[in-house]
Length: 407
View 1 (tube, rainbow, N blue to C red):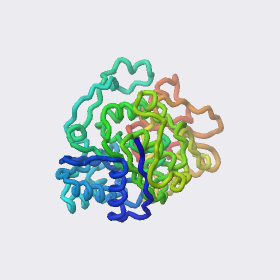
View 2: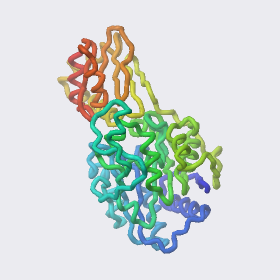
View 3: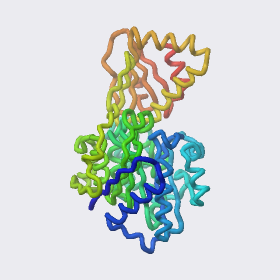
View 4: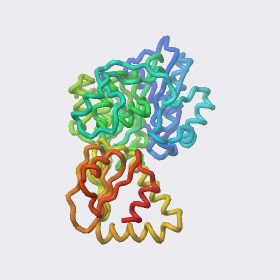
């Protein structure tokens, strides 16, 4: 197999159509006789097309135009946004609501789609908020619920962004399939950790074509809080792992240091072998700022997290600071307290199931964030005065504000 790379400098639909057609031709992808297609895009949050967070609708438009030129009649754009996100708002702000109407294609929220349970020897059923890995065996079910549209369409095209990720190092086609899981399973597998479930998802269902939107990527604290990075590339492949390895190389992230890549090789999803055609990687690769994987520090504000933590927790903190900025009463309560600790003392925020309490004793405060770290507070005989717990999955932004004011 191979990965086709093309330099595309703008979100110009005809240019993207040309790149997509060249990829089809060079990879010998046969679309003859195909009548239905589902295009899985990345709309994790309500973000503008230019943000680098979502798949740009121009890429989807170019793919739709070329599919129709090849005789594909029934085309669906599909996504299941992040937990707690208003899908209609996400579709509207990312430009997909307008695109679907204009091109007369179906736009579906995957949370609403019927599913088939695929027995892949992996999965957990009715998993409570357990904390010990040995307890997981009691909830094993062995299947993953996959939306029928991906199993019944003649063509499944995965269109992820070129992004770094603060739990999985990169967010490409393997991580992109996280959107196939329903609400409950996403909560469950975040407790398990992202690496295993995304690999088993790749065992359950595979796209026929992967198109990585790297015209503008996202670097730093991805998948949603990073910075747009102009990278001017479209990558097209037929093998998820091979395409993702090349995608990581385009960001100058070492593929063999990426946990879910190693697990994918171990589970037979793919190999380390790659073959690039079109524009060489060396001509397109740029060093993306990596996402923080364990500890993020800003002044004396420390955030401890692992791959089991949910990025919605990060969103809750971001929203909390937005609320403070627009609410005058918090300028005289939250701001002085927060400033005191991050400038003169210290605040440690702990996230993710299986997290450990940081060993700090300097007059600062420790904020335990979300249900996944509830065990840390419950296992204490007596809660120390410097420890604050904010419940929720994810925690409520107002709860975060009140917790910091009360420190």
